[in-house]
Amino acid sequence: MGECIAAGHGFMVALGGPSSPMGPEPCPEYTPVSDHVVFVIVGKLSNSLIPLAETIDFRFHKNELAVRVDDEKHEAKFAIKEMMVRSEWDRLQQHIDEKMKASEDHGAAR
Image (cartoon, rainbow, N blue to C red):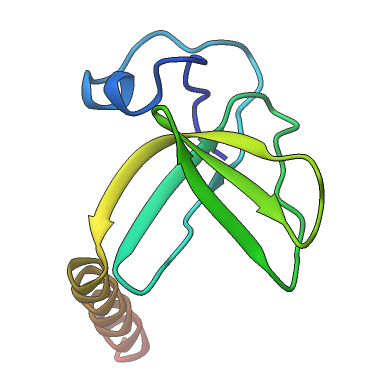
């Protein structure tokens, strides 16, 4: 769950830095991973959920990512919070895993 991003602003607001929260409820945050790019997207409302599905299609729509699950007629639109090249994301994940393993090893040595 993440902070809701104002509708119609998406990626540009995220680059602008922290702002006041839109409401008391957090919005769902997802990390879709493609072959070349990794996105962090945030729902506009607290009930903007992506169900588990066999196929998820997404497309860019203005400053948003429109997500369609399986063969549904309706698309859900999410604000793009971050975008990262896949190779950089893989390196970052590996670094996090190494830090967690080192932390676990250090804790077990006590």
